[in-house]
Length: 111
Image 1 (cartoon, rainbow, N blue to C red):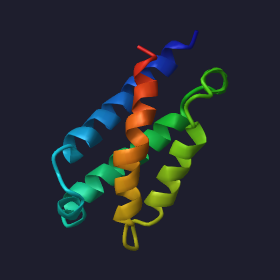
Image 2: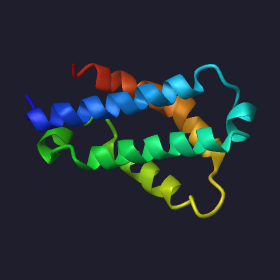
Image 3: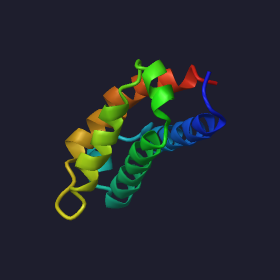
Image 4: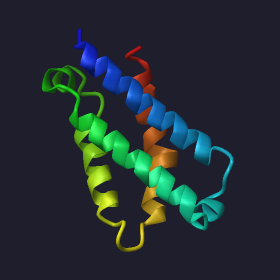
């Protein structure tokens, strides 16, 4: 099915998703964007997810095309390069609230 290393990487990705959801579950967008520590922590977790996705073997990615691996990697790249300038919290919030829950459900099927 997939290599042991892939399963370990997937677990790390799942943990990052869980942390993001815990940090943003009961918070409004306004409170989130005004909390620079929380924004930076979530941004760091998004970067972690993107980096971990690069560690998934090509064979696993090809056999699991239901996850848009490149989307997760590009999200990391686009947001991490904004660190020196203002982070677009609108984009980050959309990732957290709209895109990541559906993607995370896909990851949970790998257990």
